[in-house]
Image (cartoon, rainbow, N blue to C red; front, side, top):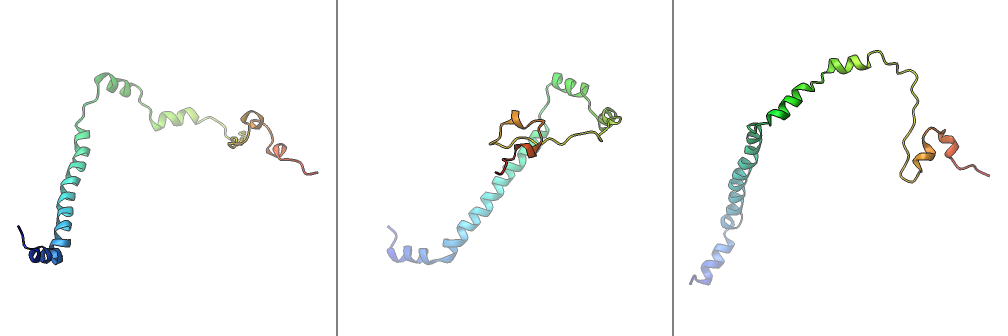
Length: 106
């Protein structure tokens, strides 16, 4: 059995008390970060299903194609209709004047 004086000396030793846990945290954190950062490289090597890849290539949407869709649209005649608040009835609000919903003072 270890003498009580030795245990007391080990307990008072600042290197064992603070240094060893810090060293374990730094070294353990390094190994943990290595494992988590490896996930990024493993995800790149995952193969996509050929059918899904074909479908994705067939549905090529480009910025130019979207621009062609809205190029001739006019945005001058739009109407701003706000959505209902959680306590309001959406059927009453849509298409109505917001001032009409305010309670009238007597």
